[in-house]
Length: 555
Image 1 (tube, rainbow, N blue to C red):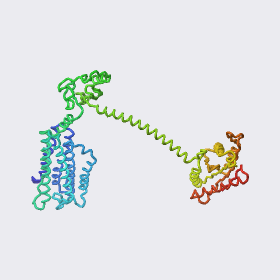
Image 2: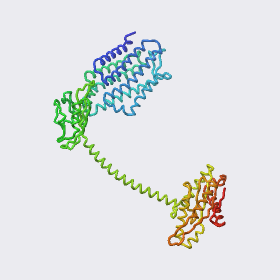
Image 3: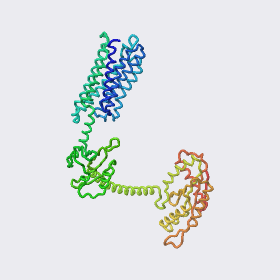
Image 4: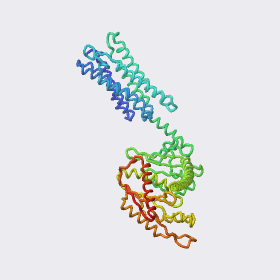
C-alpha cells in the first residue's frame, strides 16, 4: 500500500490519541461524556475509510461504506445534541417538535442499509474502492448540512443573549471547529464526487483531516478555555438572578456565598460567622422558631423550614435550611429566604372571593330550590285535576297511549273502569254546586282508598272518572270494581247545614282487554278512542239497567 492508503489510518490513530488524552486529563462531567461519545463517532469515519482499502471483497467494502455514512448521520445528530447541551438550550429537547429533528436521519440510516436499486452507492470495476454516489447521497448531504446550520443558529442565539458575554470566546472556538469540519467535508464532496470525472485520482483523507482539525479545536477549548465551565458560569448567573435570597455556609457556619437578592437586606458578609438567632424578628415569641433552632443545631442532616412575619418591613419570609452533602458527609449548609407576602395577599384576596362566592352559591341554591319547587307545582298542576287532586284526562290519555303499546308488545291484559256518580244532577239541583263538589271530592277519597298503588285514577269530566288497572284480568277487575262500588255505597257524605247525610251510589262500565289482534295497534290514539267508546257503552248499559251496578265487556 502507498502512503495515500495509510492517511485515514494515521488520522484515526491521532483522533484516538486525542480521545485518550481527554478521557485521562479531565474530570468527567455529563458534558464531557457527551463530547467523548461525539469524539468516538468522529473516529469511526477515518477507520471505515481505511478499512475499505484493506479488502478486495465487494460485500465487505460495501459494509464499511454503509457503516461510515450511518456514522456520519449519527454524527450530525450528535453534533446537534452536543450544541444544545453546550449552550444550555435544553428547552428545545422538551418540545414535542424535537422528535422531528431525529426522524430524517433515522430514515436515511435505514435507506443506507437497504441501498434500494443502488440509489445510494454503486461500485466501479466490481468493487467499492471507487464508487458512484446516487441521489440518496445528495439527500444525506442536504440533511446533514441542515443539521449543521441549525446547530450554528443555536450557538448564534446563545451568543446574542445578554447572559453569554463571559463564554463568547469559548463558544467561538467551537464554531471554528465545526466550520473547519464543514469546509473540509464540502471540499471532499466537491473534489472527489462533483469533479470525480475531471481529476485523475481521488484525493483521500479530506473529511478525515477536517474531523481531526475540528477535534483539535475542541480539545484546545476544553483545556485552554475551559469550555465546559459554562455550566458553572450558568449556575452562578442563576444564583445571582434568582428572586430568592441564598446564603451558603461551610461546615463551620462561615458564610462562603451570598447572592445579589439577599445582599441589600442583611448585614452579613462573606467570611462572617452565621448565627441563626440573628434572623429572628423583634419580639418573636412563636414556639415554632425553637423547633427550627433545635432541628438546625441538633439534627444538622435534616431539612427545616419556617415562615416568619417581620413587622418592621411588613413582610412574610419563609426560611429554608438544608445540608450540603458530599458522599453522605455534610460539608456545609444552604439557607434560602423567600418573600411570601404577595402569596399571603393573594390568599387573603382569594379567601374573600371564596366567601363572597359561597354566599352567592347559597343564594343561587336557594333560588334553585324555589324554582324546583315551583316547577314541581307547575308539573303537578299540569297533570292533576284542580278540584279533586287526582289525575286529569290529558295525563290519563298520555299514559294510556304508552301503556297500550307496552301491553300489546308483551301480551299483558289490562282493564279500564269508567265510573259515574248516580243522580248527581239532582244533588246539584237540590243542594247546590258547592255540595256537589264536596260529594265529588269525598267520592274520590273513597275510591283512592280501595285502589292499588299501580292503579291510575283520573277525572274524565264532571262526575265521571276513569280507572286504569294494569296487568289485571277481567275476574280480578270485577272484584276491584265491586269493592269500589260497595265502599261508595257504604259511605255517608255529611254536609254542613244539611240535616241528614247523603248516600251515594255509582255505576261502572268495565272493559277488559285480552285480545291483542285488534286493529289500529300501531296507532294508540285511535285504539284508545275505540276503548273509551266501548267502555262508555258499558257504563250507559249500567245506567239503563237501573244504576248502582257494573256492566263488563271483554275483548
